[in-house]
Image (cartoon, rainbow, N blue to C red; front, side, top):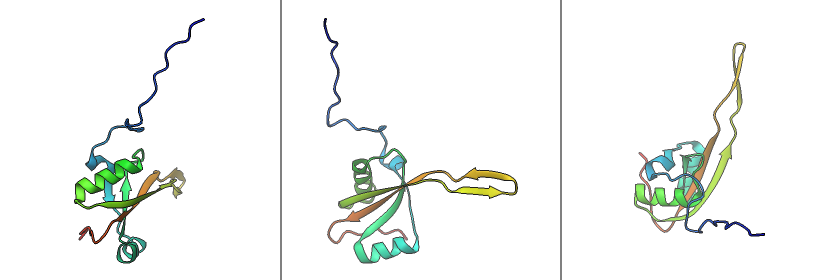
Length: 110
C-alpha cells in the first residue's frame, strides 16, 4: 500500500490572501481612546482588512507611513444588532489593529 505525497506549506508563505499595503490598512481611527494611546504610549489605532495578519499589518504601516513598528495587537469586533422600525439587522464585523511605533517615530494624521 503506497501513500500519496502530502505537500506542506512553507513557513514563508502567507496564511491569508495576498494583500497590498493600501488594502490592509483601511483607515486610521480617531477616537478619544485612540488619541490617549498616541499621546501616552505612541500607539496608533487602525481599521484593517478582516483577513490581514499581524505581519501584513506591520509591513503595511511601515511602507505607508515610513516608520518602524515595534508591536502589533489586533481586535476582532462582532457587529452589533441594530433595528430600524420593524427591520432588524446587524452592523458589519470589523478588525482593528493597535500599532506601537518604536523610538521617536510619529505618524501625522492631521
